[in-house]
Image 1: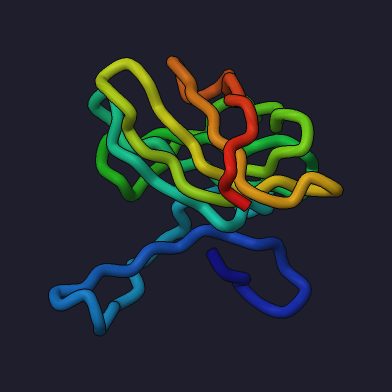
Image 2: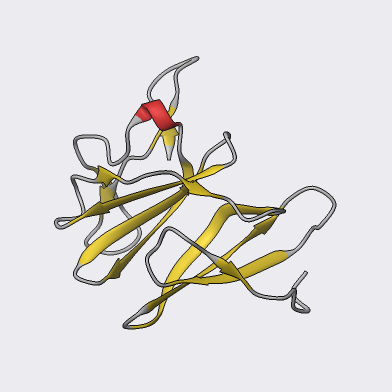
Length: 130
């Protein structure tokens, strides 16, 4: 994620690389600036790309794309209490996503949760990850 200019909203951009060291920015935004998403993760699941990002408004940003370049914003996700969508999504199995994210407030550490639709998240009991 980055900013388009001084005092402007956060946006999500993309870059490509042939060697994993040198990257070239691609044209266009991947996420609307109106939502100010940042710290995104993207995963291929159920035949489309799912983009998840943190938003300052206590709602998680979720968008989908068939080509990985043009994303369609879905309804905002309510962040589980004490959790932020700053982390990474991964495919647990063909029907389930897993997310590892940062805890907020007085509950420092990592949260883990699962989702069957990418919108509603079931948070698992805290683990020893801190």
